[in-house]
Length: 129
Image 1 (tube, rainbow, N blue to C red):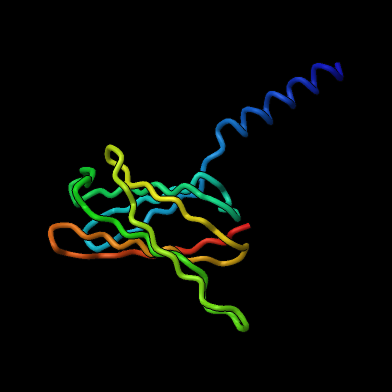
Image 2: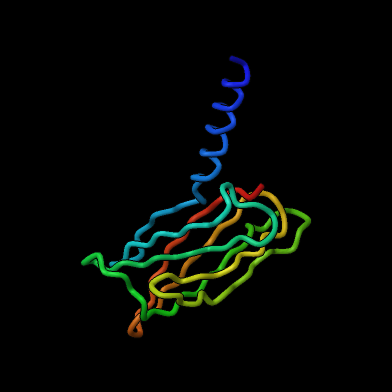
């Protein structure tokens, strides 16, 4: 009976890990619906893969924009400001970038979307571990 319970527990734990989701944020940026997903949940020190999906007002994927990712930590006493930028690269209908998080704590991400000469942006925050 104990072996059976141990096996069932192991299956449940491994199933939960197999379907673990990344860190997800859904925001509005002007007329666009933006979904940002990071592969780690919670985001952690080191390289974190960011995927951004942008949909227009009709729900169609936007694949002809330039997306600039600005990220960093707010200024803290005794520390220099940490501000980084990365151009997200389009892959199919998803924009991809890598955020290199240098230390734990509160971080912000500002996504700037430029399409047809018009720029809009959205911002979200997370706590890195």
